[in-house]
Length: 522
Image 1 (tube, rainbow, N blue to C red):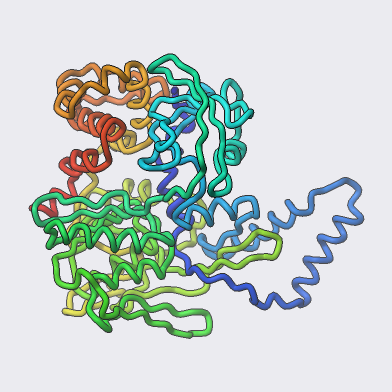
Image 2: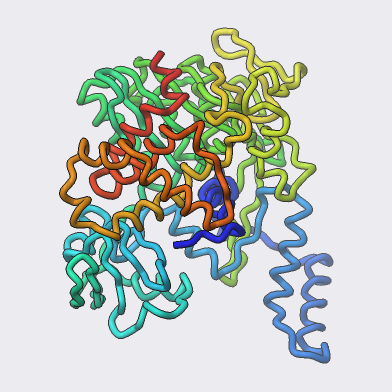
């Protein structure tokens, strides 16, 4: 698959952007909210009615209303947003933690739906679908040699729990076409990417968001790691844009002792709500380290701030995003809703970590570019903090408010100046697609290799490095891998391991190269 250079930055930053835009809101709906009629609302209603009834041309007044609502919200803060009714279901589902479907990771390769990997023990896996399979038909609906929108594709593959869909499959490895019935089932959307031991006593948990199921996943991860010997934990919140505030407080409760303050919120009326830890924590004494970076936002910052201000653990990495506003979802009656900022939150020391938002355009969300220009990604001394916003932790350490959580231990960006693009690409979906296409050329060969044999094949020569360089160049990016040759090979090898074996083995390889993890282990 050629990745058009216009879209490559989108591929690289999509998950981060979605996380930052959707993160950090209170879960409660307000079905009884009082949207009382007044002269302002009457004025808007009258205008819409006049256009609907009197305007000379036919106009879709729904679209006008959407523009009006968006225009109003743009005058507030960057996190108060309008969500059209056709987007509500997708957003709600992304935060629910599961969906009903056939359970595959896939991408569109040459206008064909190709299975990268079936989800383990999911419906497709149970039905015998394998990596590399092409899905030609869903029932009688053709899915190849034509452009199919994501909405149409998802509609064909998703459905009611227990319902069946007949898939027509082409298996390239055996050059055979066949049909298989797949019974749709609940497919989890993982919030905890991995929970594994780094050494005999150190557990590592990677959390990608704060959704409905995140606490349950997180709690199980802690118990699992404790049972296999973990007495220290590293919680990785890098690039985690947030989610449900309540989930973050439940997770913090695993580490803090009874009655220790987790977070405080204050609304427009000055009403203050405090959330305290309870007696139920399962990791209240072991060493805790939290990893953050410039894309750790909202609920991630609630967790990191509570750990830091209670002197419960060490914050390692780079200054977090700086989102201290709390949103609540409010339905508008027609299936759409707004996510409205209703309060500010404060860490236990009293800090508001919300950064200024005079610039409400793309610049507000693009922290990487701003901090790259300022030098903050590479030098701790370049972090700008306001001396007037000093606060003290439980043990009297000085911490700062006004724009994110400043780490206790600073770790610069891994790539050297001028080599940032290479590292970004290695951590993007481009690597996934490249590796899939390499596997797709000769799965019989790769399936015979052990992990050591695979390492020799990928890392032992420059064959795949050169192929990847050409692959990226086809998208218009001429990158010089010479100074990071071995690191690029390791990233490629790790992705081969993930697609051929399992996530645990992938993370063991990646974490061995991770600058922040290395810093913690030292």
